[in-house]
Amino acid sequence: MAQTLTRKQREIQDREQLILQTARDMLTERGYLGLSMDAIAEALEYSKGTIYNHFSCKEEILIALAVETMSKRSEMFVKAANRPGQSRERLAGVGVAAELFVRLYPEYFQVEQIIHSTSMWEKTSEKRRSALRGCETRCMGIVAGIIRDGISRRELELPEGASPEDLVFGLWSQTFGAYAIIATSDTLEHLGINDPFTAVRYNINRMLDGYGWRPFSTEFDYLGLFDQLLEEIFPEEQKLIRGSFAL
Amino acid sequence: MAQTLTRKQREIQDREQLILQTARDMLTERGYLGLSMDAIAEALEYSKGTIYNHFSCKEEILIALAVETMSKRSEMFVKAANRPGQSRERLAGVGVAAELFVRLYPEYFQVEQIIHSTSMWEKTSEKRRSALRGCETRCMGIVAGIIRDGISRRELELPEGASPEDLVFGLWSQTFGAYAIIATSDTLEHLGINDPFTAVRYNINRMLDGYGWRPFSTEFDYLGLFDQLLEEIFPEEQKLIRGSFAL
DNA sequence: TGACACTTGTGACGCTCCGTCAATAATTGA
DNA sequence: TCAATTATTGACGGAGCGTCACAAGTGTCA
Image (tube, rainbow over the protein chains, first blue to last red):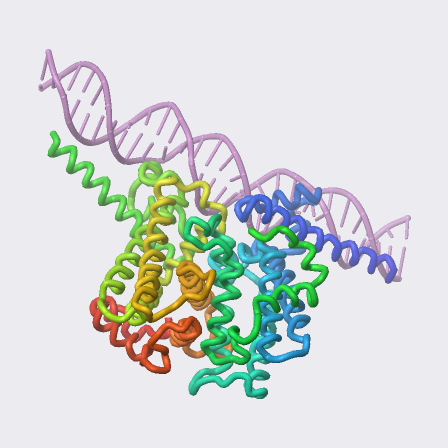
């Protein structure tokens, strides 16, 4: 009985994964408007009611997808930040993780923007919302930790009145903004931006130089380090994006 | 007859504005999901068909709103860039315009994100799409122009392989990302970011310092200049946001 | 002025999708 | 075996989009 019960429960849990996977595929292939509860039910050959037993509304599915993906992201951040080295090198590792992430999960930016922009936020459960916030906080915490490490190692001094979080915000906006622009503009080339990913790396290095974070990008080849870290920390993931440079 | 015809045409044109205004209000008040064609028709006491004579679908209204707003933005950019002075000062003026813009039209970020994220882009007319791209290009061109001016005045040298557009991209991502985050997170304080707008100004200055754009922010009080420019270039608009600091 | 062509406005209609819920089927426990 | 509990179903109501045949309004000219 406990046997059967758990089997059933396992079955249900597996189905939840199945639903999410189907939803993710639909979202990737046919966009937000192509994602419908009826379509998911039909694709999985379950009735709509069953889907609703798992997720109380469409938004719950979306936010669940976001949580799934974001939690992968924070794992990648941890992995990168754990590599020993100078503070700014470690931050470069996190940068690699961030860039790799958007290449592996380009649909995430779609999901995130929809969640935040369509006033669906309120309809979602507090549990999932806080899970998502948790991932966000964790990612930011990792970066803030590296910054504090840099300060204590005297590789970086923040000016009066600036908190590590302000710098985190700078890095966050820079990357988020850039990746969101990259993901939503079909072409940046007509604007004269031929290699946006490199431009992001470059601009961030300039900002860190401006903060006086040593060694400066003039003294150390961070751009070279990037590729090196990519192979070193994420050998598996790296394979997946080989040759898909242009996004 | 020409008389009557033009009166009618004027009437129709006025109605177009009325529709857009109503749509904008609805969007601001009740979010994207609260915006419906039926609701607009009812609010204006016209039938739905009449609304559809103006805009062939909901997305057309959204993109029309975006064009309207973006064109205001590019006007503000022009106004700011025309102020004489050193290149970096002039860029600061554009920064003021950009910040003022998001405070005056916070709903724009919602609209832009929806347009790009819901696969509605394809449904809109090429005419409006290119109008929107035009505004975008214009804004970027202004910034690129200032950068080129800085280079020719020898206040800035770009490193090998970097184009002015790459720096424009950095400024664009930084501001876009920051404002998008500000607009969609209900609170940044719990993350330790108490004054995000100042943080943006600060981070951008650091990036420009990193590029070696003189005078450096250590030599010149750009943060003070910001407030000064706000009063000088946009005295009218400034009044509108008085006291609404926190967004 | 009145008949005719043309433009503009209308709202019922068909369709799709969301989320519900009473009815039905399956599973469990005794 | 059978009653209680739990899971599943799909018809249904409701909301919104976009269409289209028809109605109302406007201008033209004899």
